[in-house]
Image 1: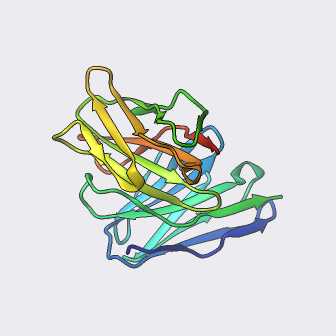
Image 2 (image 1 turned 120 degrees about the vertical axis):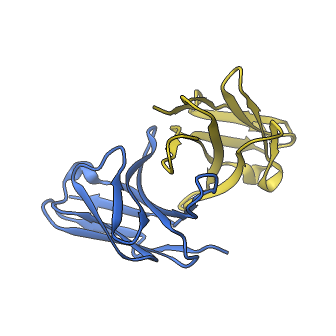
Length: 113
Length: 114
């Protein structure tokens, strides 16, 4: 079974802090994704990566950056956390073929106070 | 641009009755369509997908979905609902020409009452 793990289930940070969310997958997938999930809005793509050191912006990249130094690991960085970044963050991975489904981690619920 | 609409925020059904969760989509090319389920405090789990071929797709846990190109719909169905099917369901679409970016609907909460 594909396993996608995220570094924290719950995280509380203060406004202005730098926040790192980490995601690791164990199935040698080329693609990795970061989404945020908000009630009524579904999932919105922040960034994705199709290879090591490669990244593309999703629908809502403002206020976020990403890093992919190794194939299995994809990090989401909030450079200066703000209260409107309080959300559930989901990481996913998939094979390179766009017909393949994505596999999701359990999510990190981030609260910025 | 690609988009997905799930017109119902919540669907209520009695256990043992058939259920339908609706999804309509918009793409400029050919669609790849997916359904995911999210149980409380869990990530999303893949249920089924339509890529090409037979319009009726069967997936996990007895769910199926019918691709209707003329109505641009991909409704999720199950003949007999279980209380354990209560969860949040997401429809997603990828345009054949749009690479690997999935667009998700807003989600529909399914409540199955005993």
